[in-house]
Length: 312
Image (cartoon, rainbow, N blue to C red):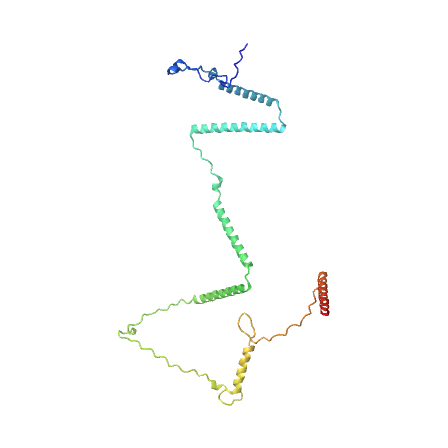
């Protein structure tokens, strides 16, 4: 029978508080190291065993999947697609093998094979681009001319532009006529040098200019104005009055001749005011009538109180 453990004690806890010291430790000598034996699990190849078991498991699953794939049947469309993919893979493998064989043969023979010149090199692409650009420029010019024909300026600016164009055309026509008339005038006169006798002598002095004539007073010829009767040499008082009356009338009646409008300088006479229009009274409401009645009642009460006070 197993031996029961000793009872628990709060003082010692059932375990010794201090380790028993050996004689060598008590005397101060070094402890002897005792190596523990290496566990047997360290020497075992557990990781390699785990790897081998995982590989065997995957191989079993792969074999089972292969067996199940051979037993199971896909739908007709999927089977046809799988067969096409297998055929494509076989063709691709055959092409790769053929290309590898050709490359090996070519490398063994080391013969130079020129690649064919691409068709784009021989195409006249630059000439075609030039033709397209010329056609585009022509279309742009036609569209600009059409828009210029359809465009219009404001009336004043349009009239000014037309007058300018007419002047330009007239000037060009004059120049053309002048050029046609002068094209046959090819004679160039020969200018001979002046003879020595016409040259100025050494002591030549020009004559001083003549002084301008003295200014003459301006004659107004007011004596020629005569009265309608033709009597006397000076304007008559009636003629002066007539001229002054005409000047005053011109000051009042003559229209203004400056931009932007024509107006008379005569004083504007005031106009009579328009006749008065009777304004209808504003519409009344119930609240207005009640307020008016209350005011009249208060006024009547005050009058009665005043009368009573006066009698008393």
